[in-house]
Image (cartoon, rainbow, N blue to C red; front, side, top):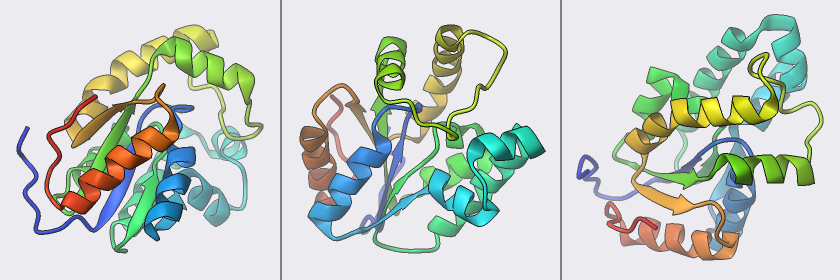
Length: 187
């Protein structure tokens, strides 16, 4: 997987399913490296003036995904960022192209359905995580993770276990970013 050969990484993008810890990790990296932090879900909500749940109820998932693609494209124009992407950002071909850009270190925070369900139960976020289907939450998480896994892997330069302590994962990401070359580490 030697597709990325860049002179220097300009930004870090964190991908993974919801509740994989992207936002928490992005904040840690931002604080330790002095990179500006952006969360695409928050940017979308700020721009739309409503929660994701309200957007989806009012305008549907297709509209939200279109907004997500636009916001991700806007982040790609700015250097020195650490960006927590929405869990479904990889569903867009245009967004995957951005995530594969050689100037961005793209990290996949790999998680299990059990881990996602546990985190969602421990820390529910009102207004941000509407259902994606009519399935039970457990079935939805299993199905979506299975569907998205190949897309996350296709974009990833670095794959980390989302169950590991965020400080440990932050250290690995920062080391890869500062090495200025595609990391060979996958853990």
